[in-house]
Structures are given as structure tokens and as C-alpha cells.
Length: 125
Image (cartoon, rainbow, N blue to C red; front, side, top):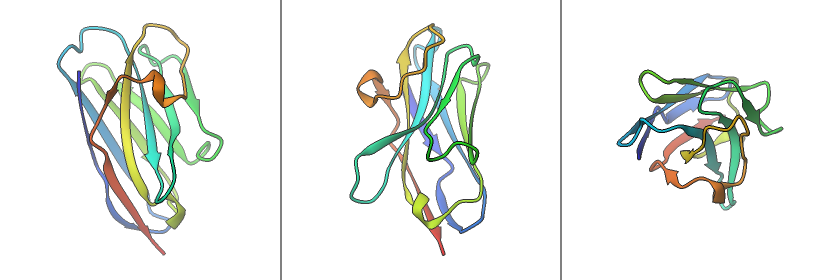
């Protein structure tokens, strides 16, 4: 499975932004998908995840209420809608996938086998 993330860019504080991640390859299987980010000088952190069916969603406390994950299974695309962005949200954002039909959404990056290349989001003050 190959993941292609897009939608990053330079925005101002308070702006909204949507990231997209499209999967290609063996997309006939079931995949749980997630978004992570790497803040400057920090470890990569989990932001949000969604089960293969879309029935289960999990958010990190740091973004709950501001970020929304969703997926379109027909286009094999997962989205991350980010609202009220802050300069502290400046990071490289990654999408990830793991083979799973379970409704359990995991937050550990070691659980995800497939990764996109990352897309840079820069929020200016």
C-alpha cells in the first residue's frame, strides 16, 4: 500500500486547513488509518485515527475539538480537517495505515506499517 499525503502549506494563525491522504495499491483489504505529526525537534506524535469501517475514531487530547478525521472508502482517502490553527501546530504531518478490520484504533506509531511521505504545515503568527 502506498500513501500520498497532500494539503500542507503556509497558513496564518486562526486559519483552517484540510489534509488528504490517498491510498493506492492493495486497497481491497481493510486498513485502519491515522494521522501523526512531528513537531520541530520532537518525536512523531499521534493525532487521530479511524477504523477501516469508519465506525471508530480516536483523537489525541491535544487536538480533540479542533481536528477532525474522516475517510471516504470509495476513493481510499482519509482527511484531517484542522481548525483554528496555531503556530504550535507547525509540523510535518504524516498519514499512516495498518491492516486491520477491527474497530480498535491504535495510537502507537509502531503499529502502523505503511506511511506517507509527510506534508509540511507552517502556521504563521
